[in-house]
Length: 268
Image (tube, rainbow, N blue to C red; front, side, top):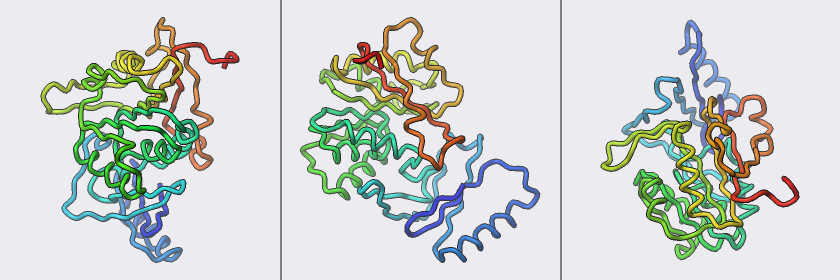
């Protein structure tokens, strides 16, 4: 997979059966240089390293524009760069719904959904992520886009712990959890998306206004929303096809749903 950024080429090498992988990568890099002579960053993505983050001594960073907003990317320090481009239509959907709303962004990562919500005119956006490095990165993205700091809060905490203690109500809750996570932090439980989606979504409902909705997303291919819902009376609308960008058609792993307390008007 190849991403063309404003200052770099980013080449993702997935699992393959190539006899001479290095020679193929060199050939690809030479071709990319001939198209646009900018630095090529090569990253390896396989089943054995999709969970464990890889850290490097030297940071290779850049700033990119998406949807009229600015985002800081780190191309080398972590497995991911700080912005999942397959969710750009989902982010734009949140922006279209955010005006005048109170928004809660869970598992907020570097805050791209939050930035889109703020750009869409949200009254206030609360973002929660367990990783303090991501919270700092999130703050930098907010500053890049000149958002007033009285319109948002960035909270470094375990999502379930936050939801259990939270007393506020939100119009929109964005919930894009990892497929699997485990932490050495005290009081933070292991998380597996299929096993824990039901209590997670139920906890979200306690913080959701009756007229609001949860945008729930996962890239876990085996995830079964019907199994997660069980006999509960959630009103669920599958948005996956609508949120898939053309360049990801036929290969987009993420799926997303809009979940309501009550039946949608018009039977939608």
